Length: 355
Ligand code: COI
Image 1 (cartoon, rainbow, N blue to C red):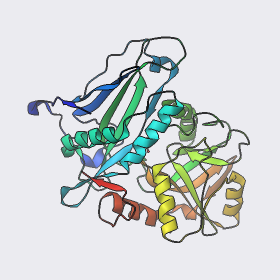
Image 2: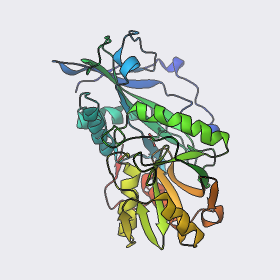
Image 3: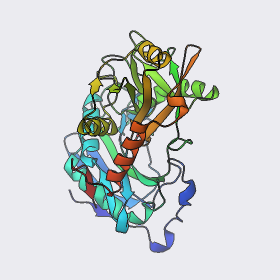
Image 4: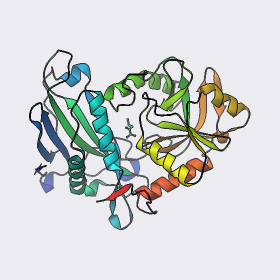
């Protein structure tokens, strides 16, 4: 892939934000990657250019019918200023799967990975040095053809933007409180729950707002058919430690196949723990909590990393997990994953890519 590179003049570069108060997604870097797809022509006009607004026809199909998919991954600054990516090809392969589900074109994954590395290299001064801060990478694809008929668009824009970020949750690595909703559902069998498409996140906002109003950080979704089996949390997959067994819901089609989820499963298997990917009912969790068998709950995600859950609220009942404190497995996973991601620890599964 030929990439045209147009750089911002040195005097016009943005001031870097204070790394101790980055928040999540509030700042964007100086450059972005873009390329266009036209039916019959494929992907073309790849460029790295100054970060700027897009011009879109008001009839652009993404604005009406939601053909929009995205990914999230991070660049980590390790020792000696080295910069690492974590499993970038897995994100890009997942993006192609999301594209297929949404009748959008696959991306040339290997070439996009090279483009992504070139972009991060150009923006390397934006990769934070502060502990726990990273450069969040957001590849996105939208349908840009103008038209009001409901069908797959013939024109798309793919872009990658970068944002220096701190912890996703205001709690940082401290336990979050979760509201289990049986009013709203995120995804239905046969729907698009396993595609990383914008609509899934739009569908989650109402329940998240209601949960936050009541003082909870996130929502835990139950399955849409029985309203009984745990699916995932707003922006994370979910794990339970019950009688020493590590349990997470299976990839049934309505939850996202998280890359952090997959990494955690691999690590806990490496450590010889008993692991089950099986449906788990919310009642089973509450009963386990009442009988003292529920040891830990934590979420996994690129943005959230490992996020311990300190309490769950369901149908008027609140259950505290591990006395509201971070459990030993959550802590060990956080340390191990971060150790690998920042290049401090051996990487036996070849997950990291050094720039
Ligand atoms: C990520 O973890 O990268 C996500 O996609 C979550 C995001 C919606 C904040």
